[in-house]
Length: 361
Ligand SMILES: NC(=O)c1ccc[n+]([C@@H]2O[C@H](COP(=O)([O-])OP(=O)(O)OC[C@H]3O[C@@H](n4cnc5c(N)ncnc54)[C@H](O)[C@@H]3O)[C@@H](O)[C@H]2O)c1
Ligand SMILES: O=C(O)C(=O)C[C@]1(C(=O)O)C=C[C@@H](O)C=C1
Image (cartoon, rainbow, N blue to C red; front, side, top):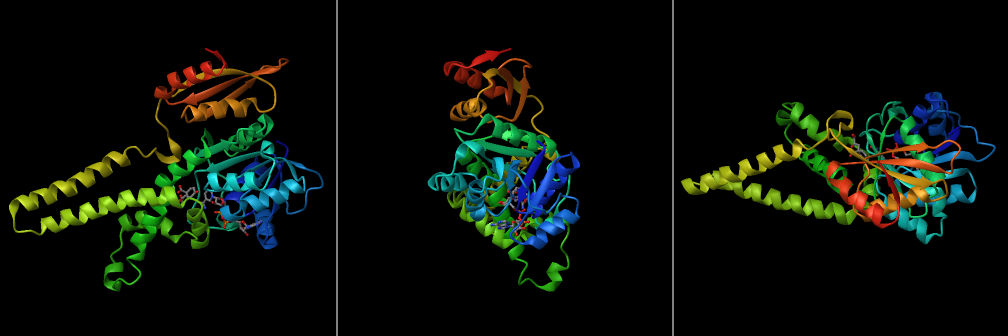
């Protein structure tokens, strides 16, 4: 990739732009607020001049509700060869684009799993995405060239590509990102009217739990409005846990010994389940399960081939944790290494074999 256009120079757009510029890509910056594009340029993210010819990749980093319109506008103007967005939800914007008749061959939906409670270009950092998962959700018609540009962006930002179906992504982030945001906000909200004497005692525990409660409400209303069902499902399960925990605590106050014992068991259960969930959270910078397996597929060098492999893996219910592509020089073919968790490898191998893909050791 030689040139890129970042539309929306806030936290995410400017962070990606700084990383790309630092690795030799000529980056153009634009924002509906020109002052923000100027600030990003001053931070070394690129130039706020207008590109004179189409760039290789347009990176749309605006709030989810503006994504489809911004992409459609950029495509209508022919600003780039490939287009992607980085919004925190993938299904809704995709459907909006489909409904608007957007050409999905030059588009891929993406979502870097890194960010901050802070917004705007001044919160940007060059290493924001390092070692973090970056979800890629190609459409069934995304061109291989566009997919490769997205993979290059992820590599230049030193992130780890994870290929996922858009709706599966939205259900996953409801659990690991969107519900935690609401829970953090709700815990912090208890402090609003609390006595100063209590607030003065805040220690590290509540700081950890409430960091993201400082996030921008406008952005999060936008994110949650685009993923309400899956978030409500997770929150309803959490409400069940809350109700049981309240009952367990009330039992602890009872005079009856059996009731107190059941209260202790209830509290212990929720704390132990918490321990079990916590150990599943990957280490800092996305340290993943230690061992992966590789399924290697031979693909022809023609438009849409890579997207087709990803779509076939997606319909077999497989998440691709990482991807490596080796282009055989002088041949119209390439080897694609799909990196998956070990238990997924046999299913993926069988599914790709069944769909006629040539697999290699
Ligand atoms: N904040 C996070 O932690 C995080 C992480 C991953 C992905 N995302 C996603 O990245 C995107 C950007 O989020 P952010 O945190 O950088 O927000 P931000 O508020 O820091 O930046 C958004 C920028 O987009 C600009 N903008 C808004 N509408 C525009 C339009 N129509 N055309 C051009 N510019 C426009 C705003 O002026 C602002 O500068 C969102 O879709 C968000 O869901 C956010
Ligand atoms: O670290 C943080 O501040 C974040 O909350 C980042 C976070 C997340 O939940 O992981 C928030 C929203 C995004 O869409 C992606 C990343």
